[in-house]
Length: 243
Image (cartoon, rainbow, N blue to C red; front, top):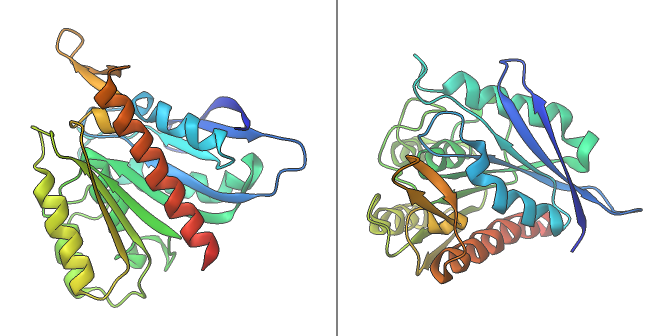
């Protein structure tokens, strides 16, 4: 594992991004990963364990804040963090290619980037990753559900990687499975992986009722979920590199 340096930077929209940079002399540049958290406003820290482990594998990772209760549902924050990472990833070891990944309410926006090149001047991600998401609900990045965007997109296919905890009692894991089937039916490359963990466990977290937010967990299920999530995102990066 590489050693990891973490720094916090600010986007043009005054939102914070935690950058997890691999530190190894002579290391080659790699595709970067942009990680979007769920519905809780500005909770980039919940993506920290995934980001840190990715950086330890030599993959620059960016965990970005976005404000879901903004008037636009967070769209400007999401697209602003994407713009920031595209412009600045090389400074932290990126090679110009980027995977968008998200959890829960951040999964839809991350996956939507594959279907909506019109949102970012025709830009295409290397791959997209959705963790514990719902894809029949409106993506905060685009204003339409990813499953509807999939049905009408004329964009060239990029790989779609999906995972969901089968013990998730917040968002039904079968919705992810159904969406994976829709992606496959459309002729796009897709990898679907169920994991024996719950909604927060797929990030190595658990929901703290008193704090009303997710906090790190070292339970067997949470650590199993974290390993699965890191493996999935790393596979998305490596698969894209091989294309």
